[in-house]
Image (tube, rainbow, N blue to C red; front, side, top):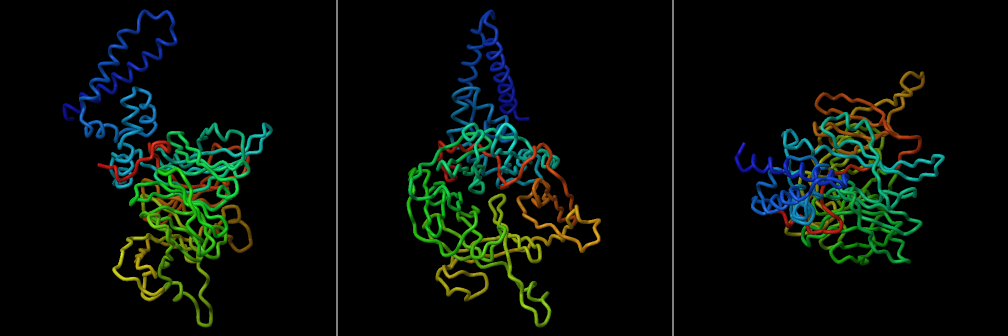
Length: 446
């Protein structure tokens, strides 16, 4: 180990022990003296200023998210470093670009946040739970409750998918919409007008790399409103071309399932460019294999897509053949072309290249396997990929499927740790330190 790194690691340990001693002294009024601890703390704070940023980053990148959150309480310099500097964005960028097989990415396991409506004798309403986020895949089997005091005992909804570890929650009846980071428990209430109905719209959260700004989009009927976190204000940008489902952030766009939407599956895909507030229709993945599978005299089945994102990439799950596609790249072209003019190119000149990753076999409903009737198969809702490349899918209520594309095998399990009630919405999320109250931007990354 390099001498500076070894010295700094010992400093971190000493500082943590010093902090523990201070807390212990506070519990013991008759303690001899805290002067030695105070002196040691001052030495640590002065030493922090002498440590190069890259050395600090090298240490902190190796630590679990929960440890980093706790370290914000060590000192004001550490609070500034972990929360209000460019470090959270450098950490997030490292996570998104990380080789999942690397030992440095142990804390990069995804988390699935889902709301659970519990109507118990105590009158409690919606609660939040998380699965995943551990070092092993077993972490997807046990739910951990997440406290959010602002919504304690109330009925609320998850309004957006996650973007850089943040998401939006809402109490529609009270017209409350907040941006929330489940890793740090920080939130920011978004201002709402009383007559717009924004809180009840179909929402999406994304990052505009050109303006270095996070934006919340709400579609109320056909009317589209965009909230800028930097400007702290809403503005109306026009009408949506189609009915939309919850937005998915990727590549500086918000992608939406559009058109006819049934059980979260849509027959079109559109994207909203967050830099110029324009909608574009996205060419769908190739359907040649579907056409070839249809017999003579039969019509091609209506396709339905379910969108998800992971590690900054967009994925589309096609229900008809249970195939998973990845949007490989988005290329700007010099000239616009006519809609459906050439394969994979939209009318606005943005070329979408889809790559087929896998086909998932039909998975029989475990409760019906032994029945004499024809098998009934699960309706699959892919959520994210695990650290080992397995696809995590919600199927029904507390049931999930873990599919291994290499072995072409699957495992069904029921999430433990939940009381009686109904699981509502589930979204995949990465852990991050980005504070909704100190938004800077990914362009601040060194």
